[in-house]
Image (cartoon, rainbow, N blue to C red; front, side):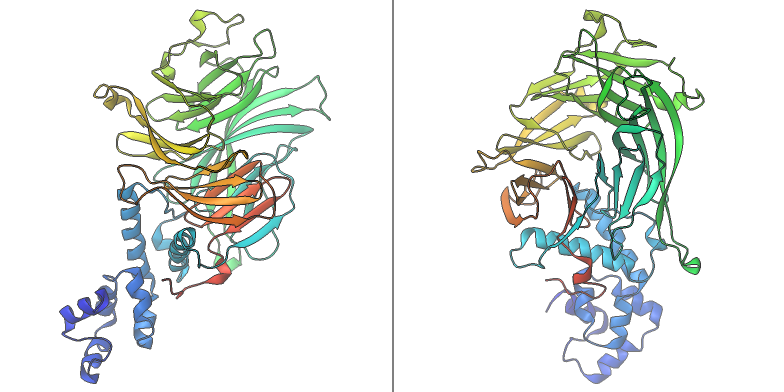
Length: 501
């Protein structure tokens, strides 16, 4: 007898199937609210199993209260295990009938297809859109990208039919180079995040005079549909702050977290082989009206200029360049309103921790998984995955080192092709040529098994410039000259009531 039979037997002294008619009548004559309360105690697998038994149980198993309870339990388990896969863009109470079920079953189907050889075949879509920077928003529904005009555009990947481009941030005069980073706002009622932009604007086609450089922060929020007016969900944005940056410098990487923005600056002067790292408290500049005279923490980096920066909780900053990984407390950087004209020893500070991993790749940005006293990131290096754990400042005194590296698994046989990774916490992808390999790399203190290859998929295009994926939606995005969307759980392959093994 399965879990469903045990529950029903313990409550009603019946066995299903095959119970006498009188026992069935006793179950089905319960008040609706009591029957719903009982069904809420079942797992999502058992909810799917009871549907063929009768019309009433089929109806109750699809009700919103039942799936709201499932969503809360799955969120709790997702937080407890640290998987950070499940994401809802609004309170569960605001989802319409069937929507929560569809999202949860898609997540379950994606996880099954990630590990099964005989799952639903993935679906490919190709969008012929020329883009610059690309971000896949958590949940896998919204795809943001920057255009040469300086505008930020988004696609709703859950929408049916041809892709429809929606303007989120309007275009600017002339042409632009745009670097972009996202920071999700915790405890928001609906999906809300800040977008940090470094916009280098040319008045015409790459004219050398009149170039401007601005750092901007925009607040993006999900606007829920109005069923009565026939309107669809959409994203809306408003500018919070804009301040200038030296137009003779080039921003290679940008990061935003809370009240702070960090970015790298490539100098065009005598020190062009190095870079500055600049951190700004952007919330203090909201009323500055675009000026340049603001206080910043700046660090003269002796690493090569292609430095990538990630802001971490507790005013920590992770810096990566050419295999070197360094951790800083940016409050220890020299503070001033102007960058030093001639950097010397007073222009930089010593890292809290540093290491070198030959062949390490931190692009695209690996997700940060936050625990109560640590942050974790996944790194691919040469032919294997590494796990980086950075401890919170208030716990670092208890440890020998503020950070540590562990082995997550080796990937032999990938050379001579250099694999292009995209990262998750427990799952990642590797792309060699047109071959996309799915990989599982559990952490040593987890209970998800060992490192293993999970399957290979032949893609339409060669190695992409950007590779992004979202585990909840089972959606992988490969960006080259077009945008290729790979759906491990195609929306048209299942719906409410789908049976998953």
